[in-house]
Amino acid sequence: MRAVTEPLRSRLQANMAVVAISVFSVFAAPTLPAHGQTAPPACTRPVYLTFDTGHMGTAPLIAEVLQRQKVRVTFFAAHEKTQQGDGSLGQHWAPWWKARAAEGHAFASHTWDHAYWRADITGGGAAQFRIRPSAGAQAGQNLLWSAKTYCDNLRQAATRLQVLTGQAPLPLFRAPGGKTSPRLLAAAKQCGFEHVGWADAGFLGDELPSDRYPNAQLLQKALRNIRSGDILMAHLGIWSRQDPWAPAVLEPLIEGLKARGLCFATLREHPAYREWTLRHPLQLAIDTR
Image (cartoon, rainbow, N blue to C red):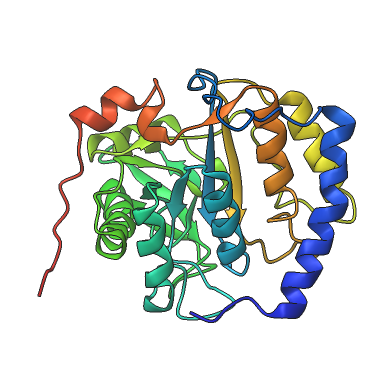
């Protein structure tokens, strides 16, 4: 995996320095325990930071922030086009995924083809859905998928994640764009996948145009509105955003939320999904040849 280029790193670090000032306009910096004192008790006010795949250009810098801040997150992965390599779940990014697994992060499906639900097909017979993938050989096409086809696409991403990370992904998924219907959710649950959305305040805005939604504005809004229990959502790179959200907003956001007494957990610990994940482990056919 190629390292992030120095010009990009310098530009992103400069952006982080500017954006970080916003934290102190909203919250004071946290007080750290003095040398020799014990750390404060474990946080009981979690938020659940999640990342969907994207072009992966900022993924190495995001990983650095998470490691430095000792924050574990949940990644929802599809096999999307990337700035470098052969797609977000391709071999180029295999070392990156393996390293995240070693750090204790959690993983779940985002559909293999980043397949958007568009509509239910009503009428008698088995459930069918109008689907529009944004990745893969049929990207941009309007397709008619059965429940089985949709489930197979969910499993394909989950299976690849297990190969890359060496650990079973969670029996959860996030539909691209969060677009679903009750029939789609029922079909996915029937084949072992519970859907995960995000809180209103947890929409971190990294896919919005940066000229109208600058990083400093997104940071202040998130710090003002996020509450304990919220699921937060961002991406591993957004093609259309000119001024990257991550890592410029990510680190001051984490620091600001910690200053409010919030902590970070994966969806393994979320009370709405904890029992489901324990009772419904995915049964995936892994080719070990």
